[in-house]
Length: 372
Ligand SMILES: *Cc1c(COP(=O)(O)O)cnc(C)c1O
Image (cartoon, rainbow, N blue to C red; front, side, top):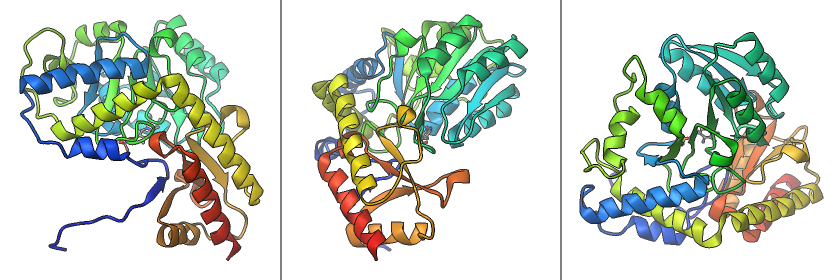
């Protein structure tokens, strides 16, 4: 295909990327300037401040990593975990399994706390794991499990980590901008996200924040961080406070314009208003899906408004339905991941895409395809 690529206009209602607003796309196409240009350095400072608002934190080390959410995950682990450490990892879906991978590749031990895919992390089991492994120095869990559509009680889990002198690593990739996330009030120590979920920005950047306790742990490491690119001691010199910016890597300049614009939109709307909008349209979607005979997979208390897991009715061909939605309605919804493949659909209502038009479009299209 040696011609320019013109993608169709899809409605993205899967697990991410979500619909990107024209405002963000327009920011992306502004002229590229140098990444050490004083004006770009000012923009970086503004992005950091807007991220502090989104994360509800005063953590100084709050920055966008120039790589997707998975790099944010890896950055949290490689900086806070050293070879030989013990880490309690909660798994109630796909992403907890990736945390285990990260811990083991560092040469540390992962103590797994398993819960059924579709249930939240059970704090009682975490308390027991700490009792059995008082040497654990980190607790890691996923706040919004995108593979199942389940929220876990981050506040209680962070408090458990603190009580046992451990740091809390929190995956907030699907959380940020969609539901409440109080990094400082909850006492989370390393929290990472992604741009393509509820921030509705282009994929490829991972906002992350580290608490002062986490920075202390990083500064007192006995061994070098195994990743050069993600070593926060080096990245701090690039994104850091007053010090002169030192070249570390070339920031994705235009993607930073886009992130800045999407964070500005979040600030203009206000976090509380954004959360209320996510909840309201989620309730409309649930009502609509139930009206066409579908049922939700997750208990109402733990449902994520931004990621709705729906049971695929008996005898319905999962891939055929998703294929027809894409072909006839330009609508993308998500397939089940891991052990939920073929059993559930995942319907995203994230960020800019969380609106009544998308809710109606999805219910109408799905109803019409299922009727065939
Ligand atoms: C999407 C997602 C990731 C990975 O983000 P990428 O940008 O795809 O690398 C990690 N954790 C959770 C919970 C996610 O939903």
